[in-house]
Amino acid sequence: MSPSLPLAEVERATPASPLPLPRRFFVETWGCQMNELDSQRMAGQLMQQGILPTRDPEEADLILLNSCSVREKAAQKAYSRLGEYRLIKRRRPHLLIGFCGCVAQQEGEKALARIDDLDFVVGPGRVGELGEILRQRRLGQRRVATGFPDARQRNYELDAVSREGAYKGMVTIIEGCDKKCTFCIVPSTRGPEQSRRLDDVLAEVRHLVAYGFLEIELLGQTVNHWRDPETGADFADLLDAVARLPGVSRLRFVTSYPRDFSQAMVDQLGRHPNICPYLHLPVQSGSDRVLRRMGRGYTAEEYRDLAGRLRRARPGLALSTDVIVGFPGESDEDFAATMQLVEDLRFASIFAFKYSPRPGTAALKLRDDEVDGARADARLQALFALQNRIQRELNEALVGEQLDVLVTSWGKRPGTQTGRTPCHRVAHFEYGREPLPLGALTRVRVEQAHPHSLITSLAR
Ligand code: SAM
Image (cartoon, rainbow, N blue to C red):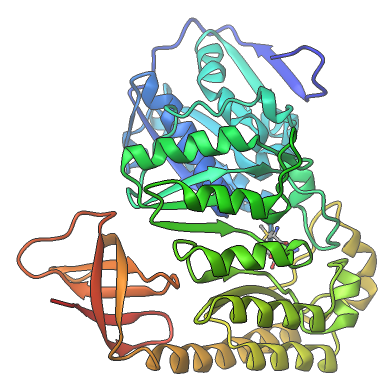
């Protein structure tokens, strides 16, 4: 680690004698896919030291809370969860507790000062250092490792990732976010944008394919803003290069920023059948006035135009989106524009949230215009009702069709399994005599449709 890095770094010696190596660890993960992958990276480093995972925190000698700060009273929730883990520590004093993720980045030293039996704090930019942080903790140091080292100094060791969920291999291609959306805390918790080199990304994808993954998911807060730091190649070039790699059966990427989605990227979706016909493209609002106040940099009309071009390039493309309701100043007319956009664009799914004020964000200045909580709740419910109807209609139109499904998990009922269609819909099926291996592809026939899933049977 270069000493010149502008990182918040605190090391405190405790009088404790060297601690034994934990035998079992437990990780709790909140939030987005990037947090999920960070947890896999932390788990991988621990497993390299011979520490094994457990599903039961009561059995663990090391607990990591990988927190998310996008919404609600994130810090409060995190401290209350840490409080529950501290109760376990009272009974089992050798337990180590690590606070990780975006709330940990935000809180930093404050967390260590506030909780005297917290063992270390690790921000998202420093997950690659967990092995070393734990080693130092065992020697008596309580470290706060936050801040954002240069991507070239981050540890992306390919073998130090516990790729659970055998079906999907995730690859971070761009860290951080430089956008200035007025509602969003991500730029301060995940730091400035930094793209990884094309060659490094391709090497990681090849590694995952060799490992047996059929599906590759490229990750970034604004994944389509990726640029090779050396050659200037853009995300359209990267999509093309990854989609051409032998063995990549399914390729996904998340999250795309509408303004950065160029025509060349649209064309790649039409060119490569192994790029999944599913795209998550957060719109946030259907009102230009609200979009402007959010600082999104596009209009509803531009978003509609992009959706149309994507669907023409890739017939059958399923779009999903994020919507924030109750953003400060959102009028009935603004909300009606969002409902109209949702009605018109017929998203395959929507992640809708009530606006939640976040510390340090520009939208806090708009607080005078706050939307009454009950009104925002009612809008959210109206949006969910509309979207439920649309999803039911879209899914019903699939009844009788045969689709390829990637097996992702065991079903809730005995004898059943669950998978994902190319459009990312959840499909349940009975497996017959033998269960199918997780991560395998199989063909199913859609028998029945619900708004959030399909009941299917194996096509023979
Ligand atoms: N970088 C992506 C983008 O903005 O396009 C996603 C960032 S965030 C991790 C995922 C979603 O959380 C956002 O698309 C937004 O809908 C929601 N979100 C972020 N900040 C929020 C806030 N303050 N209140 C409510 N929802 C929020």
